[in-house]
Length: 313
Ligand SMILES: Cc1cc2nc3c(=O)[nH]c(=O)nc-3n(C[C@H](O)[C@H](O)[C@H](O)COP(=O)(O)OP(=O)(O)OC[C@H]3O[C@@H](n4cnc5c(N)ncnc54)[C@H](O)[C@@H]3O)c2cc1C
View 1 (cartoon, rainbow, N blue to C red):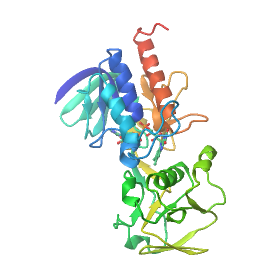
View 2: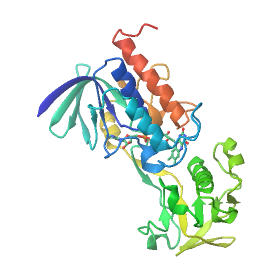
View 3: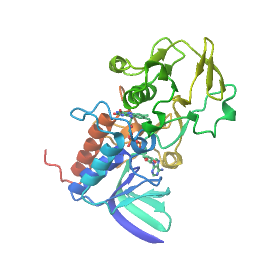
View 4: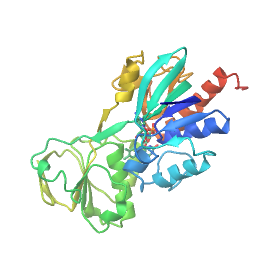
């Protein structure tokens, strides 16, 4: 077992982890960032690489994967980004964190949790017939990172949140589909997405107040009609499995519904010198989006610099 000492360890290389890593390296703070999957970028690369990112001032029509690649390219040192990492918390003692990855023990002064939605699994709705198609990825999907596949096809997007609406807008724009080809189907009479997005649904066939009763091959049967379609994308959210946070909770990390409570001024969690950024964080009026990741990662870096006596206002 090798002992590797560093100042900061970041867990998770989604946008918030990558941004924190980038800032810290620019301030010459020795940092290692761990990512459990085989790629960096978190939800941006895993779930919507081809979709333009909304809501970042000055960033227009930039795809999520391009955005992540830009952040990665601007990192001055990529050597300490460790992919396929499976981290266990060994101990916290004498104000140091001991983390294990394979045969290495990493010892650090500060720990930054950027685990986001962590190991996300899409919620599979309980709909008659769905089990017959769950492995038929050509028909049923739970996210899409390549909109080209829907060109000239009929697509039903089920859900009423931001992801469903974003997909509907992106697919209707990217594929030159006719109005009837992209259907957004929601069980309530209003969409619960950011209401500013509604004006971009002009090429989308919006069907509200409809419940899906059954799925057959290329057919969605609701309580109001039958819709022929080549694809159906379910955007009903995700369930989370975060063993790493559970391990930390044994040492005193306070969790609220799998999310981490922080002090908004310092971004410090209930564990001393353990910070959190991005979607994993919970505080009043928190919105899970990239602009929050940017703000929070910048804040964590300031807090660490301050503790190191390097912050000069
Ligand atoms: C379909 C969709 C569309 C979206 N569109 C937009 C948009 O247009 N604009 C916008 O602002 N936001 C959008 N969002 C939200 C945005 O993507 C998230 O807010 C953002 O990705 C959160 O970043 P994060 O780094 O906190 O978490 P994540 O992106 O979830 O990344 C966390 C990373 O940590 C890794 N990880 C987790 N646990 C561990 C562990 N124990 N060890 C090591 N690694 C671990 C994960 O594998 C993952 O790579 C969208 C989200 C979705 C799903």
